[in-house]
Image (spheres, rainbow, N blue to C red):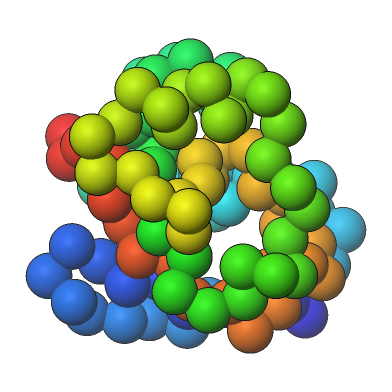
Length: 106
């Protein structure tokens, strides 16, 4: 199992326990867990509505690719610890991570 924590906009934290090898993105898991994120583009790194701030575990994540970096550059509140949840696969790199939702609400 892969355990990581989601911090909602109101500061509430919930640890999610996800089976290994499910081949989903963090965005898909958050939507399935009833978090209110728009994810307008459906995971194509074209809208940034699944923006998360990585509070813990940033060094364990794979580097952001150009499309993700370009989209993050359009956000006024993006920082060096910002990622798009649609571009993070649920695998061992997320283990122990803490992710704060920053994207737009539905």
